[in-house]
Image (tube, rainbow, N blue to C red; front, side):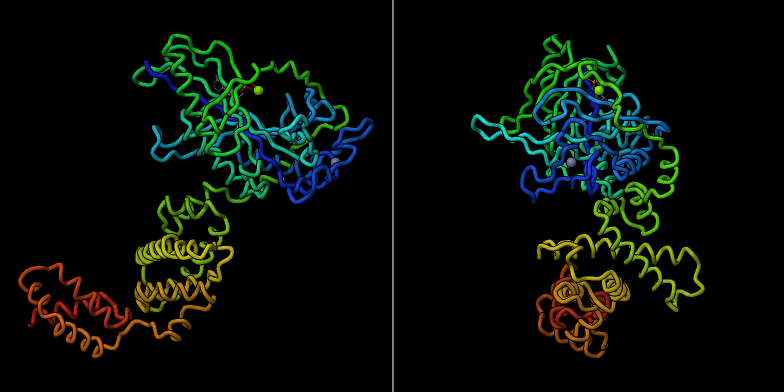
Length: 509
Ligand code: ADP
Ligand code: ZN
Ligand code: MG
């Protein structure tokens, strides 16, 4: 008998609106002192009237659409009643039975996983306001900072469709990226913009993966996970803990709530889960219901290209490897840069006199070569040089035009790799265009044949022992001799040409 994890996530995403969900207070910015961004509405004074933030509704609907949900034509807010110091009204305005979005899905790819891909069902997504923040002083007192209270959130609930902690993590990362592409949240887990409760149970399956016993068993909900690492560690810990219980013949009989203790690297039992009825949900009488049909139609037509589509397009249009396309599209600014580079390069390619009147296959082949050059020079070389300098594509002085020109110089072999690296460094240092730098530093490929021939002859004379060994059959010494000629040319010669010249010279010896 084997145990299969069954995992579902409840995710809160903080929406990047200017003001709070139901009042005009600015949304929390960590730079202000506690309790500066508060008013009678978000402090829950009696007799005040909340007004729905239209931007938050738009953002919520955008997320619902991006998750392939049905947007409710008719939606409303409800009061979720509970008593806690971080909730001055003693209820949270949330959505209960008519959320803005239902029945969606998100497809994820799972590199190296037990399955390659999975479609994760989205049960629902609803809008609500965040609670305030309790600050435990360590002494007897607890302080409450109401700046966060009333910040708009969208809560996304998935079906129990994950089968490993890795799948859960990949989903969260994709969700973060979607929120960023939509511009609705920075979705930074470390800053609390994205928070996750992970639900997990086990079930028994046979060798073929067929479910043997119950389809669903009582689950554990691990609350308030605020980093990808914590999500993964908490789920891994629960899989081990629950497996032991099953093996001992005492599987969990009731659903429980646990917390993640990062110092002890384990989950800990909290309170047992309240029933939904405990919250005594009832319709919020002060906020009118939402009619979303028109808004959904409007926003559907404005939805930007989402990460998965963009990645696929980068593979087909720019001939990038799927892993490179993924790396690039994970940062939309870098992806914009790459789009710009390719649009320059493809325009240049099409205009090349020698490629006029060639057919599509020749052009495709040339585009493929450019794709390889761009990903090689961008991701490994430029990426490395920027990392060394502690900068990224946002702060670097390299423009897409200059980088595209640089690639054309490499593609036409006007620059070899060694000189290319020097030019790239100089481009990073002063933002100049590459042909300028080449002229300045005299880095152009040496194509003076007689000068090259001289260097080749000179090298053959300087290394008689190596030449003799090469001619006696040690073929790997050719590389060494090529390197010596390159060195003599201070890196400006073309290794391919040197190789040919050496082969001719060494034969005729
Ligand atoms: P609750 O009544 O405890 O709020 P819900 O049915 O609303 O539970 O589901 C909350 C989350 O728990 C969802 O993400 C759902 O996919 C997940 N979930 C539900 N049942 C299970 C289960 N047996 N094992 C793991 N996760 C589950
Ligand atoms: Zn307020
Ligand atoms: Mg629930």
